Amino acid sequence: MSEDIIVRCAPLPGSIRGFTCKKNDLYIIIIREDLDDIQRLNTYEHELNHILNGDYDSGVSADMIEVISHQ
Image (cartoon, rainbow, N blue to C red; front, top):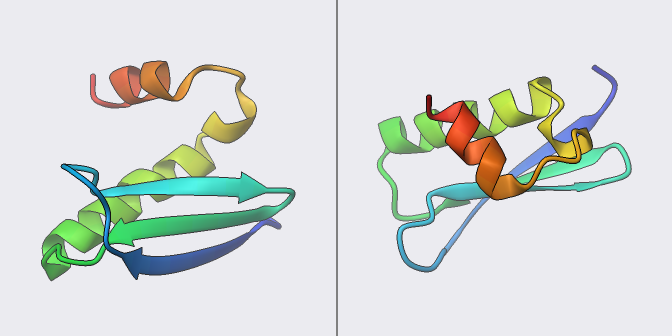
């Protein structure tokens, strides 16, 4: 995998634990700052799996990707 990944913690609204943005070959994973260490790791792994699965290049909506990933 030649893409770069940056991880940052930040305040996020509601129940959002994290999300990832892609620009060219750069992925930025944002993780909710008030999660405990285990929740942060789980969120990071969830977001990393989206990257490794090629979800950002699939053309499938984010809502559908989440439905599929939680099955």
